[in-house]
Length: 221
Image (cartoon, rainbow, N blue to C red):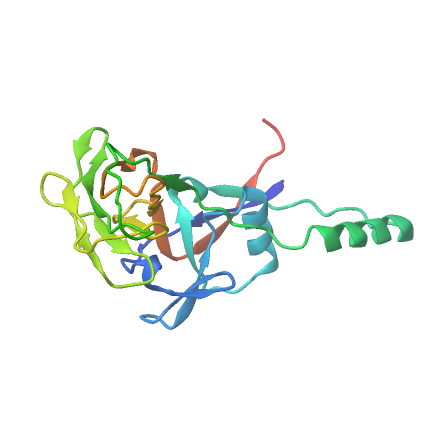
């Protein structure tokens, strides 16, 4: 028999991960006074190894919906000899850490108007958020690092309440979808930018207490 385990979240959490205090492995939830592990950037092998090496029963995690599945227990590797062990140790020194890259969309200006005064323009940002070519109401739009924001109306339209500048980041979030970050670029000192955000490509994100259940797979097909 081949050992395996299944991961599931029976009662998804309604808290906003973006509001959590950042921790080395994810974010800290003040509501339950617990660290929420962010598994969304981990590979299946990394997730499997994490739960193999961590027997804690009260783990709260953040997953993409496709990550909640059955995992095979990693096979034990044969003991390395002395020389190969040194080689692996040296390799580890040069491969320390892993960058968790978040895809940031670059906004192109539409019909730029040249600003004659000042190095940076005040930019009015407005647009529409859609899902499968249909307007998506109630999407939260926050200026990263602040509490300034707005939300889309019934038709999916929005206009940010504050003028922005080059380098500002808008965070689009909606329950059940992965947040999207949009960086404001203003190469031509445009006075206004119009956005059309499609949430279709965002993966469904589920967060809550992780239920780990052991299952057994037969080696026979």
